Length: 120
Image 1: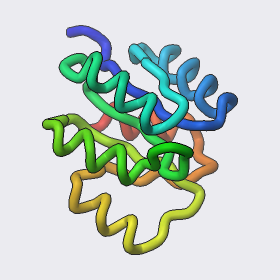
Image 2 (image 1 turned 60 degrees about the vertical axis):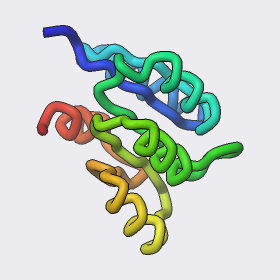
Image 3 (image 1 turned 60 degrees about the horizontal axis):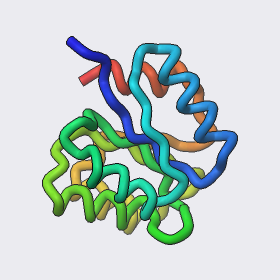
Image 4 (image 1 turned 120 degrees about the vertical axis):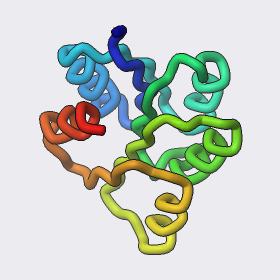
């Protein structure tokens, strides 16, 4: 079985680099994107290859809610993990309806994130 392929999306370069390095050290194959529109391009170019998407919620150009809505409409059935330092109740409810697997509150421990990815 090949390593899970994850699309990681965050507009903070340091967070994105840390996520990529940490996930790759645990055997994941990682593609990164700096915002929702960039992520949507990567998704459309590689959709059949992603097992999961890990996305920030607050980003320029296209936020996490818009990204999740779009990829679900385009048929993505994989797991979606949403990271946020703040998430209002209406966003949380909308994201749950769209099948977000887990909400990860920033800041978080990378080991906790790895555990979430490893458990189905």
